[in-house]
Length: 189
Image (cartoon, rainbow, N blue to C red; front, side, top):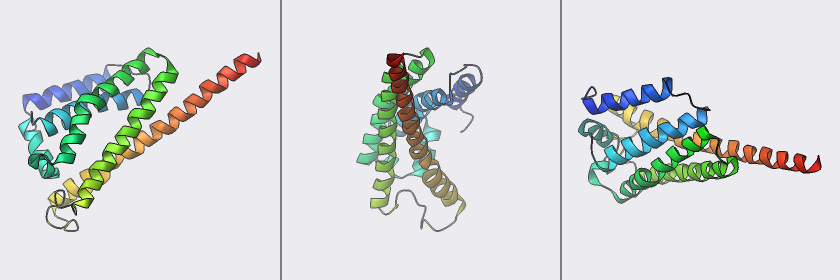
Protein backbone atom coordinates (compact mmCIF):
# COMPACT_ATOMS: atom_id res chain seq x y z
CA UNK A 1 0.00 0.00 0.00
CA UNK A 2 1.18 3.52 -0.72
CA UNK A 3 1.00 4.56 2.95
CA UNK A 4 3.28 1.75 4.15
CA UNK A 5 5.95 2.75 6.64
CA UNK A 6 8.72 2.27 4.04
CA UNK A 7 7.05 4.70 1.63
CA UNK A 8 6.40 7.28 4.36
CA UNK A 9 10.07 7.19 5.38
CA UNK A 10 11.14 7.90 1.80
CA UNK A 11 8.52 10.65 1.49
CA UNK A 12 9.84 12.22 4.70
CA UNK A 13 13.38 12.12 3.30
CA UNK A 14 12.25 13.86 0.11
CA UNK A 15 10.39 16.56 2.03
CA UNK A 16 13.39 17.17 4.32
CA UNK A 17 15.89 17.25 1.47
CA UNK A 18 13.78 19.57 -0.68
CA UNK A 19 12.52 22.01 1.93
CA UNK A 20 14.95 22.00 4.83
CA UNK A 21 18.37 21.33 3.31
CA UNK A 22 19.45 24.35 1.30
CA UNK A 23 21.30 23.20 -1.78
CA UNK A 24 23.61 25.40 -3.82
CA UNK A 25 21.73 24.83 -7.11
CA UNK A 26 19.01 22.93 -8.95
CA UNK A 27 21.77 20.62 -10.17
CA UNK A 28 22.50 19.71 -6.53
CA UNK A 29 18.89 18.59 -6.05
CA UNK A 30 18.96 16.65 -9.32
CA UNK A 31 21.95 14.64 -8.15
CA UNK A 32 20.92 14.15 -4.50
CA UNK A 33 17.37 13.03 -5.43
CA UNK A 34 18.68 10.85 -8.29
CA UNK A 35 21.38 9.33 -6.11
CA UNK A 36 19.28 8.42 -3.09
CA UNK A 37 15.70 8.21 -4.33
CA UNK A 38 15.95 7.04 -7.94
CA UNK A 39 19.19 5.07 -8.34
CA UNK A 40 19.66 3.53 -4.90
CA UNK A 41 16.14 3.19 -3.55
CA UNK A 42 13.69 2.89 -6.44
CA UNK A 43 15.73 1.23 -9.17
CA UNK A 44 18.27 -0.55 -6.97
CA UNK A 45 16.54 -1.65 -3.77
CA UNK A 46 12.99 -1.84 -5.14
CA UNK A 47 13.53 -2.77 -8.80
CA UNK A 48 16.51 -5.08 -8.36
CA UNK A 49 16.28 -6.32 -4.75
CA UNK A 50 12.46 -6.14 -4.40
CA UNK A 51 12.71 -4.56 -0.93
CA UNK A 52 9.32 -2.78 -1.03
CA UNK A 53 6.65 -5.20 -2.25
CA UNK A 54 4.04 -2.55 -3.11
CA UNK A 55 6.48 -0.49 -5.18
CA UNK A 56 7.90 -3.63 -6.78
CA UNK A 57 4.36 -4.54 -7.88
CA UNK A 58 4.11 -1.07 -9.47
CA UNK A 59 7.44 -1.65 -11.23
CA UNK A 60 6.18 -5.03 -12.42
CA UNK A 61 3.05 -3.42 -13.88
CA UNK A 62 5.20 -0.79 -15.57
CA UNK A 63 7.61 -3.32 -17.01
CA UNK A 64 7.35 -7.13 -16.97
CA UNK A 65 11.14 -7.37 -17.29
CA UNK A 66 11.46 -6.70 -13.53
CA UNK A 67 9.74 -9.84 -12.20
CA UNK A 68 11.33 -11.87 -15.04
CA UNK A 69 14.76 -10.57 -13.94
CA UNK A 70 15.63 -9.90 -17.59
CA UNK A 71 19.40 -9.44 -18.08
CA UNK A 72 19.37 -5.81 -19.30
CA UNK A 73 17.20 -4.73 -16.37
CA UNK A 74 19.47 -6.55 -13.90
CA UNK A 75 22.59 -4.94 -15.39
CA UNK A 76 21.14 -1.41 -15.56
CA UNK A 77 19.59 -1.51 -12.06
CA UNK A 78 22.75 -3.08 -10.63
CA UNK A 79 24.86 -0.26 -12.09
CA UNK A 80 22.40 2.24 -10.66
CA UNK A 81 22.56 0.70 -7.18
CA UNK A 82 26.33 0.29 -6.80
CA UNK A 83 27.73 3.00 -9.09
CA UNK A 84 25.27 5.70 -10.15
CA UNK A 85 23.67 6.28 -6.74
CA UNK A 86 26.94 6.77 -4.87
CA UNK A 87 28.39 8.88 -7.73
CA UNK A 88 25.34 11.20 -7.73
CA UNK A 89 25.58 11.63 -3.95
CA UNK A 90 29.32 12.32 -4.23
CA UNK A 91 28.67 14.94 -6.91
CA UNK A 92 26.02 16.63 -4.73
CA UNK A 93 28.46 16.71 -1.79
CA UNK A 94 31.16 18.19 -4.04
CA UNK A 95 28.70 20.83 -5.33
CA UNK A 96 27.67 21.77 -1.81
CA UNK A 97 31.27 22.06 -0.61
CA UNK A 98 32.37 23.77 -3.86
CA UNK A 99 35.23 21.27 -4.18
CA UNK A 100 37.52 21.49 -7.24
CA UNK A 101 35.04 22.74 -9.88
CA UNK A 102 37.01 21.26 -12.80
CA UNK A 103 36.94 17.74 -11.37
CA UNK A 104 33.28 18.16 -10.34
CA UNK A 105 32.37 19.27 -13.89
CA UNK A 106 34.16 16.21 -15.32
CA UNK A 107 32.33 13.91 -12.88
CA UNK A 108 28.97 15.49 -13.74
CA UNK A 109 29.68 15.08 -17.45
CA UNK A 110 30.66 11.43 -17.04
CA UNK A 111 27.72 10.51 -14.77
CA UNK A 112 25.29 12.36 -17.04
CA UNK A 113 26.60 10.48 -20.07
CA UNK A 114 26.15 7.18 -18.20
CA UNK A 115 22.58 8.23 -17.27
CA UNK A 116 21.78 8.88 -20.92
CA UNK A 117 23.40 5.59 -21.97
CA UNK A 118 21.47 3.62 -19.33
CA UNK A 119 18.16 5.18 -20.33
CA UNK A 120 18.80 4.54 -24.02
CA UNK A 121 19.82 0.93 -23.26
CA UNK A 122 16.67 0.42 -21.20
CA UNK A 123 14.38 1.88 -23.90
CA UNK A 124 16.13 0.20 -26.85
CA UNK A 125 15.95 -3.17 -25.10
CA UNK A 126 12.18 -2.74 -24.70
CA UNK A 127 11.92 -1.69 -28.36
CA UNK A 128 13.91 -4.73 -29.53
CA UNK A 129 11.48 -6.89 -27.59
CA UNK A 130 8.58 -5.15 -29.42
CA UNK A 131 7.50 -3.39 -26.19
CA UNK A 132 5.84 -6.65 -25.11
CA UNK A 133 6.99 -6.09 -21.51
CA UNK A 134 5.86 -2.49 -21.18
CA UNK A 135 2.59 -2.38 -23.11
CA UNK A 136 -0.54 -3.81 -21.58
CA UNK A 137 -1.94 -5.47 -24.68
CA UNK A 138 -1.29 -3.22 -27.65
CA UNK A 139 0.75 -0.05 -27.11
CA UNK A 140 -1.99 1.81 -28.89
CA UNK A 141 -4.81 0.49 -26.74
CA UNK A 142 -5.57 3.46 -24.56
CA UNK A 143 -6.64 1.69 -21.42
CA UNK A 144 -6.16 3.47 -18.11
CA UNK A 145 -3.26 1.14 -17.28
CA UNK A 146 -1.58 1.62 -20.68
CA UNK A 147 -1.98 5.39 -20.58
CA UNK A 148 -0.33 5.62 -17.17
CA UNK A 149 2.34 2.89 -17.23
CA UNK A 150 3.33 2.99 -20.90
CA UNK A 151 2.57 6.46 -22.26
CA UNK A 152 3.14 8.53 -19.13
CA UNK A 153 5.81 6.63 -17.16
CA UNK A 154 7.71 4.73 -19.85
CA UNK A 155 7.48 7.14 -22.80
CA UNK A 156 7.35 10.56 -21.11
CA UNK A 157 9.04 10.21 -17.71
CA UNK A 158 12.00 8.20 -19.05
CA UNK A 159 12.85 11.14 -21.33
CA UNK A 160 13.75 13.18 -18.24
CA UNK A 161 16.88 10.98 -17.92
CA UNK A 162 17.93 11.99 -21.41
CA UNK A 163 17.01 15.69 -21.40
CA UNK A 164 18.30 16.69 -17.95
CA UNK A 165 21.64 14.84 -18.21
CA UNK A 166 22.15 16.37 -21.67
CA UNK A 167 21.45 19.77 -20.16
CA UNK A 168 23.96 18.99 -17.38
CA UNK A 169 26.62 18.09 -19.96
CA UNK A 170 26.05 21.37 -21.80
CA UNK A 171 26.17 23.36 -18.53
CA UNK A 172 29.41 21.65 -17.50
CA UNK A 173 30.97 22.34 -20.90
CA UNK A 174 30.13 26.03 -20.44
CA UNK A 175 31.44 25.93 -16.86
CA UNK A 176 34.74 24.47 -18.05
CA UNK A 177 34.95 27.15 -20.75
CA UNK A 178 34.39 29.85 -18.10
CA UNK A 179 37.06 28.35 -15.86
CA UNK A 180 39.49 28.19 -18.78
CA UNK A 181 38.63 31.78 -19.76
CA UNK A 182 39.23 32.97 -16.17
CA UNK A 183 42.66 31.26 -16.15
CA UNK A 184 43.59 32.95 -19.44
CA UNK A 185 42.47 36.34 -18.13
CA UNK A 186 44.57 35.92 -14.96
CA UNK A 187 47.67 35.12 -17.08
CA UNK A 188 47.15 38.27 -19.17
CA UNK A 189 46.97 40.54 -16.11
